[in-house]
Image (cartoon, helix red, strand yellow):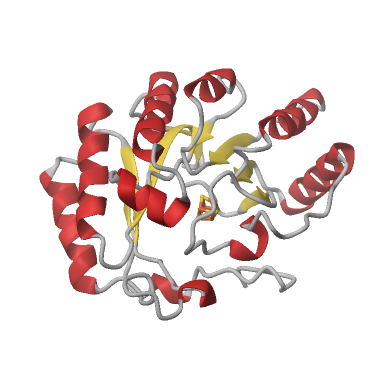
Length: 257
Ligand code: SF4
């Protein structure tokens, strides 16, 4: 839906406004790691070159919550040269409502994660107790802007809309079910959901009582059942076994290769 036949150009930012202990991108998201700085003009040039060369029409920003002015600067520069790419924002939803308001007109497809319904869990795993409240506020604003429908280009790729992702964590089926319930109640069961089974324990949570393993099929199916029970009808349910496919290694030339 986002990638189509030609793919997407995803811009990953170093560091993150959350520091989840199980982060699948910890090699770049850890705030203790020094980041290499790039000049915005250089980044814009690289993006334009890559997209032109590969015929890519979707441009994604991954974990940009702490660098919103830089992200909007890049979008403005790209629009100035007349490019009409679909701009996708993949955020953890720990964003201020005002921040999302300020992005109206910049972002075409919001691709937020909704991680926790339980504030104790949010504190334990990501260091922020107010995640459930803040996340719902951010989601509501995205929903106000985009509604439940997904608008498509003639080739079937997404042009505008909202897709909410949820990564099921091992041992936390209730959290997942509650996240879905909150989305259904606070937004609508008509929104598009991407339910993910791909959790893979990183070396940082090796031996962790709950996070040290992948999600079992039984757990995942229980969440899928709840998704259906709540009336969600649009979206994607990831296959089991995906945990082996999507764990990036940013030391490689192609981290997802
Ligand atoms: S929000 Fe996402 S990228 Fe940021 S630390 Fe958590 S899992 Fe990693």
